[in-house]
Length: 471
Image (cartoon, rainbow, N blue to C red; front, side):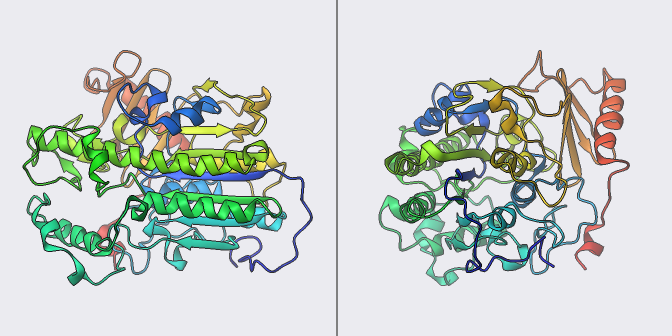
């Protein structure tokens, strides 16, 4: 059985809910919280995110309950924690061996299934290639879905379509796998001509086209999931020059290595940061076009809108780039999270509640007054828009592959699943997390690992042998 009611056919009669509010869920991949203007960045250009935040309840300390891409989205779509990755098995036909990287389990009901059963039209637009495969179950419950092909390593176009001049100008630091990935990507996008042909423009443009249709029907749930600003960072040149207008004659760092940043010199690292920032600003611009369409159709008056990201990415702040599982500093763990109420409740307010990815489904259902068919593990954050409070979270935990992270009001600690290689930071005094206190305060490390990590996991964390897991 697939969830509580199976797949929606889109043809079954729906209960009448003509006056019910709509819901729009926007997921943007790899957005660092410190690269959004309203979160305190004085030089980044994210005017549309900033404007939306002014109309929303903004969470100042949100974190994903698990990382990376697919793990975070499992939690978003189900309201259930993916961590601590119990009973993980590598997904068939997928070479990504990250703990928890697997389909939505068949016995978990998705948010789209619940809303479809309760009279909502359900729609999904994304260029996130990790969700294309039907076996991953992310399409479950959606009446219509559009997977925009060609992102990153999607086998969309023949590899021989790869333009050699792009590869000659790309920094690949001698990694054959990266060369293949970039070649695949450039083959996929070779025919694009205008900015509208880039991925986030296509995602938000097609989502806006959906709105024209959906605004004429009954209540709808629309999920818009943009893979940008995930690497490779290849926006039109005008966005790069917003952040780097100096001459650049080296190879372009389109794609970071997940590991130490010693493969880059200072100029290349500066260029990499500019490319990411440009990709983020392009995404923001086309998000704005989508929000403009909502305004044009008067949808804001009757639509709950939630926007969040799944994780960030390192740019050398602690000597690493990318998102290795042992690099759980703010540049990787800190995400934006906004909730816009159709009546403007909570607009311009902030909350330091540890909001997370598995809170999305309970929040939407709670706002709509819909009871889930199974107990959810996230919290209904919509109560905060009416002056209430969700269940207290004096601390929070998240998992990434075989590493764990936890924090409370004063400290952040992260380590392996077995508590090894621990790092401890006093985030009241050291919010950037540069002064490791683990050796000086071993009792604090032990307390946080045993009380928070093992306590939230309900016991010892799993261990897996990659070779045996891969079969």
